[in-house]
Length: 138
Image (cartoon, rainbow, N blue to C red; front, top):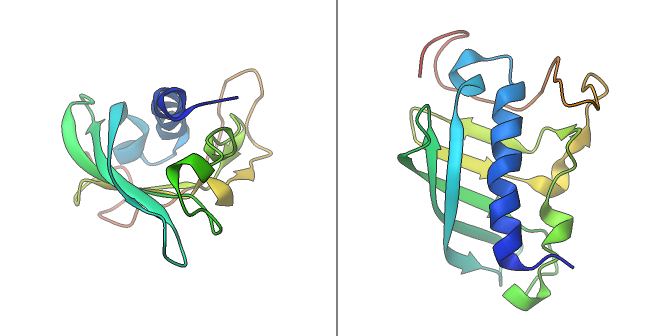
């Protein structure tokens, strides 16, 4: 059973892999070097955790993140941490805004991408990024 501390460490590596899979070069070369959960908003209709993450080309810029944890969660103890970690071949769950220094994570909306090579080589990856033009540097 995965606990919260293990989740944040594994999510860091999973985010890095997701960035590498983006076709957009502004996202492909980003790096994540850790998370610091600060705010647990678990009593609303769309529960989420907000906080700080170290991200960017160097992995050391201070970005803000929002991680949606799904309905029905009312406490940290009630979070299914393992269920929040997207499968390696899943995509469509991470939205990055490099100009705003923000990332939104919706792991429960992850979908299996048939273009992902299960050997670890990613040929194409979905996700969104709405600032700037294709191929622009971060």
